[in-house]
Length: 620
Image (cartoon, rainbow, N blue to C red; front, top):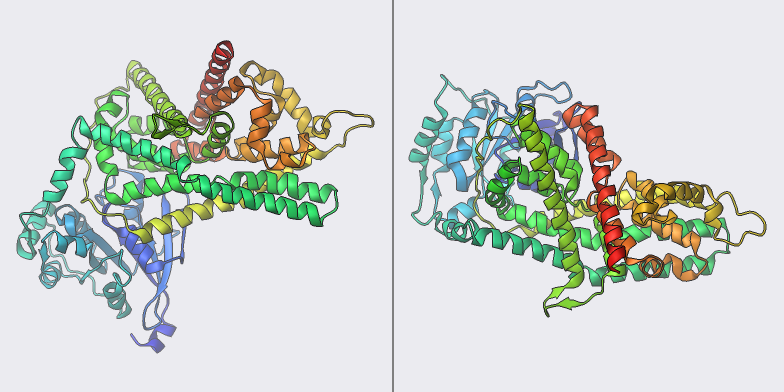
């Protein structure tokens, strides 16, 4: 297609389809770069990724990265959406001009079967052999031209993690829409896959030797769980150990900014808003960005390496005993980042009971929004010392908090399993069937894109939700002004102070003072707001310049250890934020389930905080 023709040609609509672990998203990132956006399909809580790119001739392309699917005979909402988009059945999506079926060249035995299903739709299609570098390294030889003849569709090679790894695909699409394949009669997918492999692929005897050797250790019934525990332990140690210098740099920047504002602005409401509201509140949350990114770095690296499905396999027996299945592992692990995508990821769980139980326990996983609260309290009350000459004590405490969330989820799952059994819904568990992808080194570019996206989301939350709530809290804490002759802190006489003192009656039995009670209210919108809210409350409660800069020191001096431990226990079970409640309502289509989730988590949080406070008080 010429540039002139392309100029008058409408944007071509493409759709990427393929099994999970085929490198489809890496190819999408390679094609679109930063020109992409993530949302949900209209009326459906299934994630859609849309991006755009331009071919050499000037032809414009719009491309969708559809949810990974194993079949076009849908057994989950993800697969149903993929099928509907491919057939043009969604009113919100045009029928794709070309379906791009992505397969991993290292796992053609599984992935070709799905590509044959896509071909049977009779739509224009391109087959992309991704991860060709890995296939060659493993000694595989794929006759691309023969495979194209056998399938009747264009076949191109790709290495999505390399700079020019998608060039062949772009050049093919730029030449125009390929003709639709002709499939005379339905075929047996398994038999046809075996025939294609026999005619077009030569396997090396050493193809899977490396993976077999690694799996002999990583899937061993004894060594496997030990390695998994060590990996998770290292992750939580790194959250404190690696992030320290970066956090100190951000703190220094906030202190410099506060000093700058105090130096150039006269004392008054506007200066108070900037220092006590914006810098103390939103800036107090921003300082924890390095810890959140380190946590995500580990999660992304484990996902890219092919280790996560193996971790699911290792934990399947334990999770079945707890009333879940191995398929619950990925949604629950995603919930360590945020419960919202974790709950949405339960769409891949086919069994309705397992899916419901996973949704109900997902909020018990310690999401990244709780990390700033944990880091603040641990930094204020746990000494930064080394245990055994190797382990950081603060990292050990953080690891314990995460383990407490996991143990709680297992306990709740066992209770729900027993309840379902009593109510007649405890039918036999379905066996876990998972693809174990080839091991591979995580690509730095994909890790960087993932971390950049996570940083953007966090900074956007700081700049919108968290900033808005802390400014609102500053207003509630500053007005009305204290009466003539008042001797206490001004916030004690404000609307926020009135609310805090009213709530203190409810929370006093678990050791919470009125300042904590104030912070819990905006924390319902986003948990990490609690840190900014505490910073704002104490900035308004203290007249010293250090109040906006040394929150950890302030609470360390004014709270007792039992109160700090009680608040940590509260946040292990912290009632969900509004976004989590909303996604539970959408995913289950049940307001009753949403309120049940909120009620049981609030009860657990209050009970755990009550026991923790009084036991710690008795011991100290």
